[in-house]
Image (cartoon, rainbow, N blue to C red; front, side, top):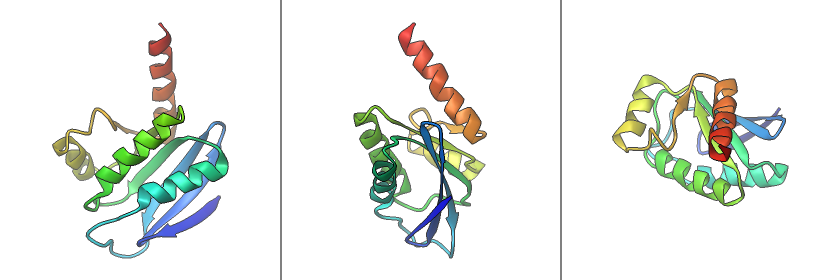
Length: 129
């Protein structure tokens, strides 16, 4: 497992078959905004040549301002390479913030990394039917 740091966040990266699993942890009280997280995660994905990411967010009590925009930016970049972004473990408060931004359907919260990966497989099957 590799560890990266950005703006008070620790990113623990675990590589699975065809997916990168990134667990975010706040190392200190987060700043009001978390800029450039999309760039950091994109850099990690390109280094591994893996464009499917599951972000495990169960250790974040809140989504800092700008995080939702960064997630959308990352999702768009990954999709351009045939990849995907899935999230799991959001608190009810964070899930509510995604809902308020009308992103809960574009970035649904999954109960676990396994369910996030399985939702991708189910989505792929539905597209081919």
